Length: 203
Image (cartoon, rainbow, N blue to C red; front, top):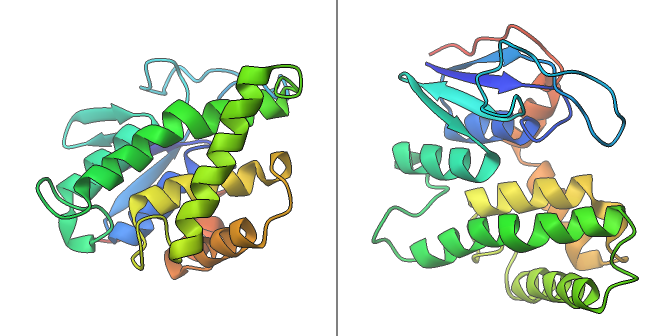
């Protein structure tokens, strides 16, 4: 059994989606978090995340925190779902690159734009333009970032883009990608579960 420590409408929402994609039994343990964008909420002592944030999972006594780590950990642990190339498999390098790119490039650029920092910084504007070009170039070639098949990288990046859609310009390519990912059956199930508490999925 996997336990997901979850706060509604947060980064842990996409881990519900991941667990639904993988078809794994899991339970959701609701926790409160401090939300810096609104100043609301507070850290929950019951949350095992080292910084009292989300997401975090417990799996067979192992604590894994942060979206990238959880996606990599679970897609490696359950390869039969087919949404993360195994070590040595074709596409593995691209997969790791996209996961790392999200943390190193996409999320920092999104947060900088939300804070109004991009317009006043040549370097941040350059990073912003590179991020947008990287995504649109990949999606101009195929429906998903790595080709025809949906992966954990698409889940991670599309969820971030959906959250921060307003910080990027109008783009049919981005909108189609977000819609394509969010209409997946697992994504729709996750959306319905997002605000629920005390949920245990059957084995």
